[in-house]
Length: 498
Image 1: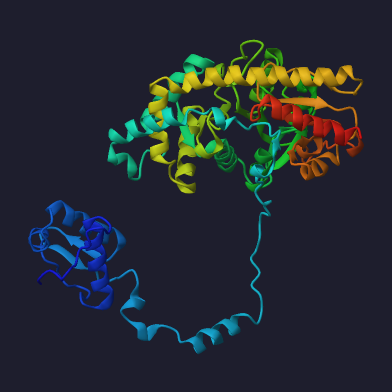
Image 2: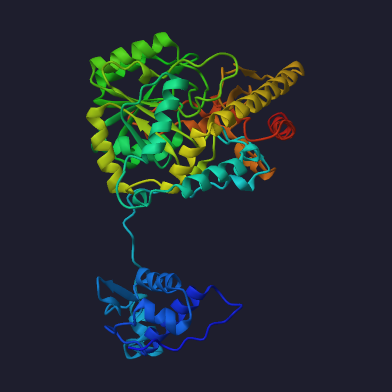
């Protein structure tokens, strides 16, 4: 058929968008009925005095939206299955009276959704002026312009095949960069690597892949709440293992391995969450040997390895794993930002296929453009430069918080703490009960986490202590300026010792 009449507006949208809009309108009004064959792109270009590529862009938009279909050597036709049938068949639209009647019919009783897992509403940390969240990076110092250039450079060389299904384990360029970085910075050889939507997805995948309903995961008594929630959501039973001032108690782990059918042990050995204790090499070796003897795999969550201030960090347990029982989890969230949603798993060949298959089932793959941008940023050296800058900045905050706490000690406040070797937070014994602190601090615009938040009372073996003994708070120092740290801490002091 001849091209439909189209009036182009000089100051309107791009010509291809105006053409697409005109054809779409003609289909909706019935001027172009289902099955109608359109004029060729060449003829339309001549009729509208447009470049042929402009016409092709308009037609491709309509194909993507479902208005047209492309047939090889036959051109374009109006599809028989239109996106909006009601635009062509208004007689099928419910009348106002019928709509009301249907609504009243289904309002006679409420529908009860069968809630299996009751999740808490997400927390908005932006509501707080003073934010002591332990893993919050300082976004004011992130090199967004540099990262934007890396993203642009990656897009210019984009292999569009990566945008299709496939490469479930991650974009090859990013996996190559992460592998090289782990070998250089952490002494870890990553033969198998799976890119995930943050470490939270990684923990969920591991538990889902290897834990059956009611089977046990051993966890530190004070631990990372989102990890425990992921394990519970996968049907696991949790077994608390005692801690002391040096980390996980090996003797208690040995006892619980004899009592409970434990399949996984979840650890944060570098900067234990929340206590910030670094597990010694001796205890690591003892724990590894116990787990090997009992057939238990270890999840090593190394969430903030980059930040160390007093000495070089101990290498990950996964870097010396002759039996292949350690599943290593880490993230970019602490160095970049949580919205990047980039974490990864390193593990033995024997279990990677299972994790990759489950990853494909859950969400198929991570955002490709973000992966390519981060890979380019790492290749250009931006990632390591940023890590060095932030380590220097956080060390300054770390020292400033240390001086503030020492000053309060000198004034007679019963504050005690051990300085961690690195990380983004301090675990501080305030010497008084802190159970009411969180809600009172919230009223003053201060976000702070208290000891009770890190217990999990629904464990198969829960070691949740007496509430009157909750005297610790976790003070994150990375995400605030020294001035804000001082002002926020003063509010906490005033609340606790008023």
